[in-house]
Length: 160
Image (tube, rainbow, N blue to C red; front, side, top):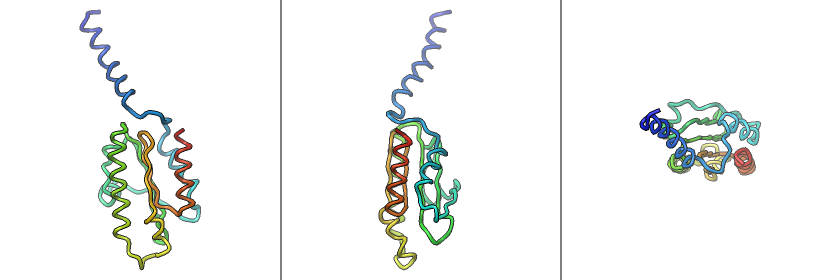
């Protein structure tokens, strides 16, 4: 094999090594559908949710899905509760950080736009909504206090 041939074989291996070293550190690689199912078991079983479609996520929520390797968002299945949560997986921690900023902006927007006269008992969920990033994963939750805490604990445990 020629010297150029050997170098051309080493370049892809070197690039792969760099990607592995700069990717997501310290977390397990868990498929998003598995994570969303685990988190869903920790939420209120009385509040039905549905999967959000791409148009809803990009147009109404304002998330740049090109940052994601995978994602799933569960939105209220009816208009009587505001339970909502989502999990995103990105290729890099930098992308995850960027996405988390978008998620936080969305949560702030939801809080600013809330009409107090509409389902006042649901407002604490909106007001106390949170996001969390672990490595290349970002999760957000608009849930009641106990369920939100349980959902984030399930998320953390699954990635350890």
